[in-house]
Length: 328
View 1 (cartoon, rainbow, N blue to C red):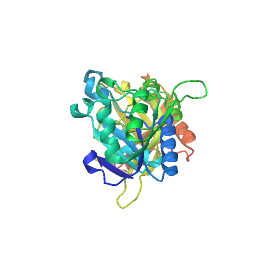
View 2: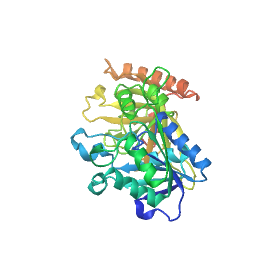
View 3: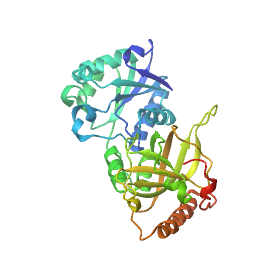
View 4: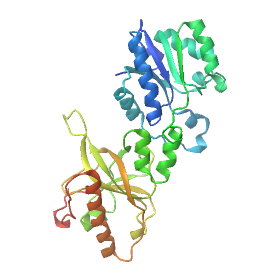
C-alpha cells in the first residue's frame, strides 16, 4: 500500500474512490466502509484510497481529554492495507486543514486525487466547525463530478453501533474478548521493554515490562491471556509468542506505577530489554488482587499460566527455574 503524507506527495493523473475518517481501531464498522470503497474502486477501474488524519482531531481540539488512540498510526495503516485499501493519504490535522470550508476541502482532495467516488457514513461531518454534512457532500459531488455512497449506521446483531468509543469503553472494563469482536482482531498495544524490579525473574515468571506511556489503550487492571509479538532480524513478519499478561500496579508488593508485564509461556531465555514489542489481549482471566502470601500468589500464577495456555491453544508450560532465567 502506498502512503502519502500530505497532498504534495500524491502522484498526478490518478483515478480514485476514497473513504474519509479517523479510522481509529479500524473496527468492523470501518471495515464495511473500506470494503464498499474497494468494491466501487474496482467497478470504476480506480484506486481505493483512505484519507485519514494525524493527530486525531480530539487531541487537537480537546487536549484536556488526553485521548489515547486505540491503534498507532502504523497499525492503522497496516489494517487499512489488510482490508483492501490501495493507498492512504495521511493529512496533518492542523489549523490550515480544519479551517477549510467544506467546499475547499472537497475541492482540494478531488483535484489532487482525481476522485470518482466517495464512500462515507451518513453522519459524516467535515470542514470548518464541522459545517459540512452528507447533503453538502452530495451537492459538491454534482459540481466536482463524483459519486457519493453514504452508509447508514453500521450495527451488530443487537443493534449496537460499531464505534471506536465502544471499543474504548470495553477496554476500560477489561472486556478484551468483546473488544476483539468489535475490532475483528485482538486489541494490541506497543511499547519498549524496560527494566523492572525483576521480581518475576526471582519467582520463576520472567516478564517483559511496558510502562503506562506505551502506545495504545491499556485495558483495565487484571490478568489476561494473549500474545507478545517481537520483530526478528531479516524476518518479514513478527514472531508471536503465547503469554500471560498482568496489568496493574502490582498490589502484592505495594506497587505505585501502573505497568504491563507479559510472561512468555515456558521461556526463560528471552532478552527483550530495549526492544519495541507488541502485546495483544485475547481474554481476561481475572481481576487484580493482593494475596495473603507470596506462596498463594505463586499458586494463582501457576493457574494463570495453565489457563492462558488453554485459551491460546498451546502446550501447558509451568513455572521456570529461577536459576535458569537469563532475562526478564
